[in-house]
Image 1 (tube, rainbow, N blue to C red):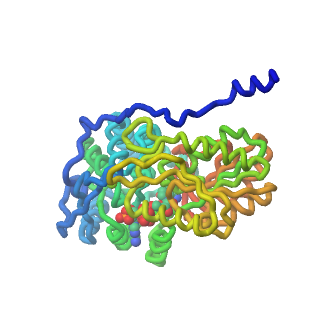
Image 2: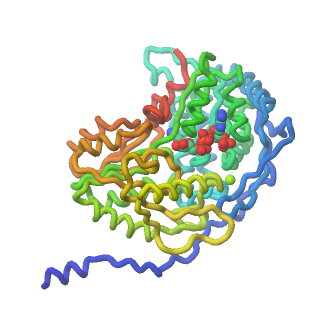
Image 3: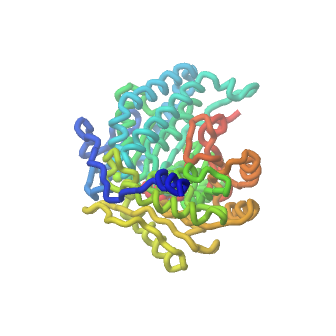
Length: 492
Ligand code: NAP
Ligand code: MG
């Protein structure tokens, strides 16, 4: 009897009616221009064809700014500026290039709040994440590579690393400033010059970065930023005077790029999609694992290439884990990305929301059992989606096979480690995976057999500039970060 009483005392009860007061981050002192031009050769240039498009705030559907739309001739101008700057930039002593990167890193830190607010306004991600993850990691990436700029002969001992020339870099909308940093920092540290094409829905922080580059008086033409849609990216890929293409985005576009540059001699790195399995074994610390699973899939609305979008849970703990997951999902705060209490912000675009909704309908049609928490989504014209969990899906179901890039988790169970490995590897992708267990030996066994470029053990979504990031199979090739990432921008 006494035992029962104690047990009752330690049980936590969630009061679901309880709400946080709003705590929105101030947008005062945040300056977003009404219109942005391309940043080419150290100055702002109107688009040659005079075309613009809108970038909107996905939480309200309202326009934030008009953005220059890049044509082939804008790309020609940007590549010419980068080519002109290449000689002097690559001839600079590494120490001097390093100083520029240090300045950039420090300025990003200095203006971190401004970058974080604009990232959340333009892309819909919770301000807590922009502040704690995107912007500090972007600065860290510049710091790390600034450190390498004058030590390249130590990075590649006994070899003579030379820059490749002009790099064309194309990035997606899920981590806009961070992806820009991942691309720019290693290219510049090794003496290359760059033309960067940000994603159509999230160009603002790259343009803010251009402002910062301009304020610092960076040598003109070293960094050029041309905004636009897929056609602008394609023009960059096809430009004859580009030496290297670095692309992060979908597998379909990655394949197109690979085809279109075959035989040209251009170097290529591709960071593409994923369908990661987060595997939880019966001896894992379950509460920690549940928190990791939630982070793995609902972080940034599931707009994460390495998202743990499949959960493989050992049969003996399946019902316990699912119950805990559902309880935790019910406490997640969905709403204003600028509110510091928000866990789940807005879906990045109307088009992405439609894609996610299509997958959710399909999951139900294919026999899956859906769980979404109760309560209504924010009003207004924003793009919102509840965190969603599916159980009862077959290995052959679309939700288990395809990347959704949204807050949708497909749960499957397994009995033995071998079954978990087979299921985890049964995907055309191979970007990331997670393992949760109390036993180091099991971690070693699993990590050596999982076919994924990044594997986390008893944690998820941890990033570091010194750690190489990249995939196997249809998740692409080449690495970003660490020495592997550096080597993708040099020739010997
Ligand atoms: P996407 O459609 O492939 O777009 C990525 C970038 O490529 C955007 O800047 C896009 O411009 C541009 N683009 C589109 N078509 C192009 C073409 N034919 N030639 C050259 N550039 C072109 O991908 P997304 O939907 O924006 O991003 C989500 C995908 O990125 C997911 O599959 C995700 O897994 C992947 N991703 C991978 C990593 C990684 O490190 N492995 C990291 C983040 C994201 P627009 O914006 O105008 O379309
Ligand atoms: Mg936007």
